[in-house]
Structures are given as structure tokens and as C-alpha cells.
Amino acid sequence: MSAPVLSAPGLSVIAAYDRGRAIGRGDTLPWHLPDDLKRFKALTLGRPLLMGYRTALSIGRALPGRRNLVLSRAHDAPFAGQEIVRDFDAVCAAERDLCVIGGGEVFALALPHARVLHLTEIDTEIEGADAHFPALAHADWIEVDRIAHAPDARHRWAFSFVDCMRCGA
Image 1 (cartoon, rainbow, N blue to C red):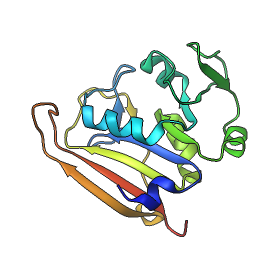
Image 2 (tube, helix red, strand yellow):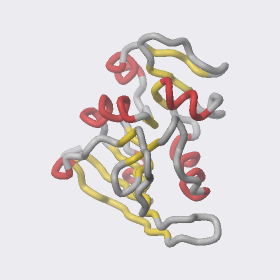
Image 3 (cartoon, one colour):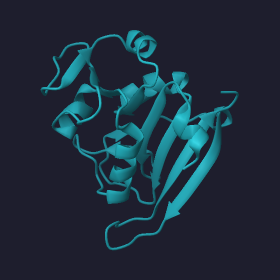
């Protein structure tokens, strides 16, 4: 992982998706990749997180060591240690180093404002996926790092960690 990407201030998007940009099925992650979870923790520890209500429910608890912000127009925060926010623009203005972690609707709101993308591209296609990562305007992004991982005893599918910065950022 490149130091400039990890230290860049501003809004970051952190997502894992398959070849069809699927990010979820039935309010769960359709894969278990221990190295991706380890990277997620390293990228987010000590930083504020913004997620949608369904993402908060799927995680099942507040993530320790991070400010857990849940964007919802109608619901209260589902778990202790999570804070509800109603206005995307207001939270972006208030949080200098925000990590957006899902789901699809929150990613769509965040992408036009993001400086950095931390992506995990998983070499599979999940049947029945019901949540997807928005299409990227590739001309807006420069790939600055890619680390490929082959399948192994702990990882069913090959995957790549991909870090991108917005052009001109």
C-alpha cells in the first residue's frame, strides 16, 4: 500500500466487490476474506466511519476504535456506540478524514466527493447479489497501487487490493 494514499486527507471510500460490482446479498457480505478484514481494520482504526443503516445492521455492532456514523433518514442508530446522522453533506463538512464503508446508496453519494478509493476486487461473481458498488468514471481516478492475492487455504477466491486517487487530487 502506498503511503501517499493512506495519508491523504479527505473522504475515502473503502469497498470490496466482485466482477459484477456486487457488494452484498441479503444484508451480508457474500465472502469471507481474512486478509481483506485485516486491511479494513488497518485502514479504518482511529478514523470516523460512515455507513448506511443496512450496513450497520449487517455489521451487528459498533466497530471499536472508530467513530461509527450511520446515515439514515428514518431510523435511530441500531447499536450502542453508533451515532445517527441525517445529512450526508453536513457529516462530510464536519469530518476531515471520513471513511465511507457502504452500502450501495451511501457509496453513490460519496463517490463524487471522494479523494481516495481503497478497493478489494474479488475474482468471482456472486449469484443473487442485491447490493452493488456504483460504476466508476475511470477517467476520474489514477490507480496508485495494486496487490494481487491468489486463492489459498484461507481465501476461496483470488482478489486484489487496489488503491486509487482522484485525478488532480
